[in-house]
Amino acid sequence: MRIGELAEKARTRPSTLRYYEERGLLQPPERTPAGYRSYGDETVQRLEFIDRARAAGLTLAQTAEILDVRDTGGSPCAHVLDLLDRRLVEIDEQLEQLRALRGSIVELRAHATATASEACTPESICRYL
Image (cartoon, rainbow, N blue to C red):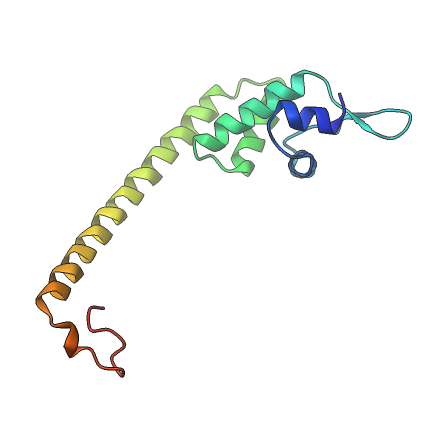
């Protein structure tokens, strides 16, 4: 199938497919005699995997590593588990940062409601912050 057909099946744009090819996520496709890219059905499955990896928060570089292990005949599942474990640690750290930020904003809000807005001067911009 041509790039436009593949993009439609994968619900993406042809430019995304070319980008994935440049980044090594998609193998260079066969070419028709006229020079058009010609993709097989297995490329749709590969794109679905890329989408699932992105949804899990993996980077394109990490996804390319996984696909490279598979393409060289290995089983990438242990590597995927390691990446998912690292992703969970990152998410936990982000949650802690968000909790701290929320606490700071709650304090700012409490201070703002206790401070008269008339106290704001043009020089101070806003005393709430």
